[in-house]
Image (cartoon, rainbow, N blue to C red; front, side, top):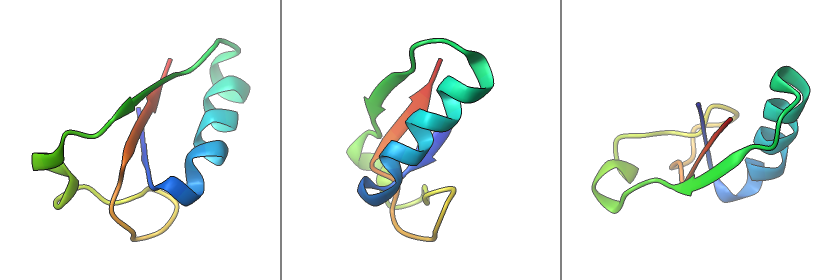
Length: 52
């Protein structure tokens, strides 16, 4: 599972496809967790969870 901001969502989707060779899932991070979860590519607030 990759947590990412709006800016890096395409990078996260590409990473999941490259690593798992499957269609990724894209879910929004719940509002109550957004403040404590940061993007894995930068330090901005995570908006999406990308997984397989």
